[in-house]
Length: 322
Image (tube, rainbow, N blue to C red; front, side, top):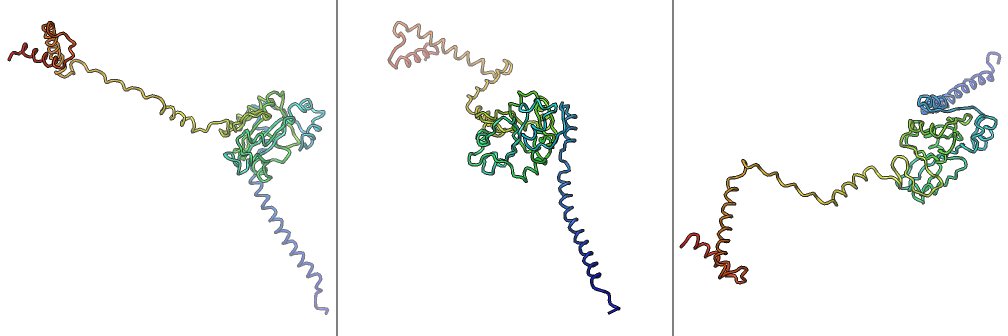
C-alpha cells in the first residue's frame, strides 16, 4: 500500500538502537574491573617512584634503558654494548618468589623472595629443610594470583626493590651472600626494560630503609640451618624463650641466705640483757670453785652419773647452807 512505510528501515533503526545500548552496557561492565584494578594498584611502586625513594634515601645507583628483558639470557644480550656489559655474569640476579604450603609447619603460608646470582644454584627442597619447613610440603613457587596481588609487577621484572611496597610487608627476603663480593648488582627497577646498577652497600642501605629486619644474606649452597628474617626458623629463638630460660635458671640457683637483722643500740636493748650474763657468770664460777675444792676426791671426767648430782648438791650447800 502507498500509505504504509516499508518495514526494512524501521527494523534497521531499531536494531541499531539496541546494538548501541548493548555496546554501552558492555563497555561499562568492562570499565568497572579496570577502575577497581587501578584503585587496588594505586599505591603500587613504579619505576619513577622507586628512583625517587632511592634518591630520598641517598642510595647511589645508575639506571639505563634497553629492550624488554624478561629472562636472564635476553637481559645479557640487551646489555651488550652498554656501560653495564662488564657486569654480565658478575652481578646479574635471578629472583624466585616462594610460598610455604599450608602443611609446611610453623612457617606455613609464609612468603619468601629469594634473590641470587644467576650462577648460584637454588634448591627449594634443601632450602626448605634449612628453614625448618616440613619435607612433605617444601617451598613452592607462588601462584599467579598471589604473585600479582603481592608483588604487583610483571613477571620477568621481579627484584628486591619490591620490599618497599606495602603489599610486601609480610615477605621475607633471602639474598645470596655472593652478592657481597660483587662490584655492582643489576636489578630491574620494577620493569624489565630498565636496569639499575648499585653496590652491595647501597643495596643494604636501601633494605635498611625499606625492610629492616625482613632480609638476610645467606649461603644458598650451604647446609646449616637458616633463621628466617623476622625471628622464625631453626636458627632463631622465639621472643618468649629468653624469659623462660631466665626463670628456669632462677629456680635452679641456690637461694641466698637472709641477712641477720641489724643489732640494736645499747640504749634500745631490754634491761634483762645485762642481768643474764651476771647470773650465768656466778653459776659458772660456783661450779668451777666446787670442782677445784673436791679435786682430791672427784677428778673429772667421772663416768658415774652420780658425780653431777653430788657436785650440784655440794655447791648449793657451800653457797647457801642448809
